[in-house]
Length: 220
Length: 199
Image (tube, rainbow over all chains, first blue to last red; front, side, top):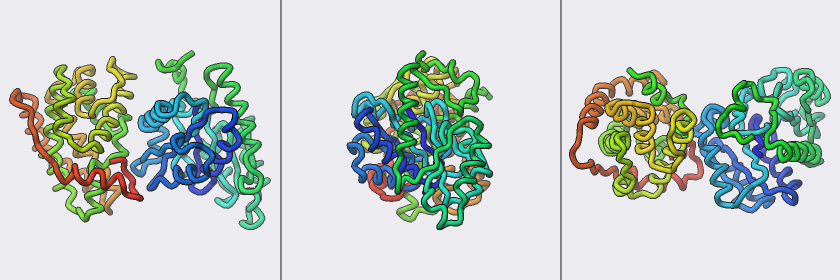
């Protein structure tokens, strides 16, 4: 199963992945593909956390086009996932981290079975209202750094409320990764993984393309 | 013109080339500013030979050993293989082609054969793609008006057409050009702490 993790620069994507790897390493074979914009900073950060063996983390260059690499032309990322598995053996769960981007970035359903969009309170509490496909339709919306809300003049309850209004029944997870960790998100990932194992595929809320499931590589 | 040639020439066709500068990034790091000269040098020393290999592959002669013999740098081999397999990965969803690791010019020829693109258009695709990939990368590496980079390609058009036609009708020995500076700077690029492009 592949989980796409997208969201603006600095919202906590790498920290979320590090926390999830820490929480799930004992129960699933994990890998991470990062899409760095200019350096291999994200991959190096994840390696430095020691949550996964180094060879389970790989980086792709995006030529300054982080959107393209996860949506319009996913070939480099698909190849990176395959190479990761070729080097380390089969993986249960691969996180694909997008390069920090603006609110319009989403993952192709051919790259990510489900996707998490990460925003944070310090980026401004009007972000959920501004919307965008990640905020409106990502399978899980994480609103991170809630511990900072009083210091940056952000109303985190309003963010959750406005995000939920946009998202209907789709879940919103307010987190403070720094102070509380990612237990809630890890629980969500476990449920996705269990559903994926039971059915062989997932129905992502991001799927808008009607013929996605007629893709000839798809195993049913 | 065949619409499938346009499809393959379109940078929106998902084949991974947006992430490559084909050596321009390191050349710019080393002080290069005359990008059209770099494009023309690649045309002479790299792209014209690649175009011939693409045409050969289009005819069923997938000459991997011969291509590697002309590309000593393991870094350039690796990035060409990566681009080749990425092209084939997308093409395999459209035509009956294998998803294999082979240098991009050969992969292009294999795809061109499956798509029914002519020899001349295959050569033109190889030449144009090389130039357009560099021109597009230049916009992210140097302060430039995007209309100016489009003009570089327009200025190159007569040469592209002439060379493509000559290559499509060339049955002589395979060309053996050398782009030593590009070969030597490829591994240096890979070691850069900050880079936008995969090549």
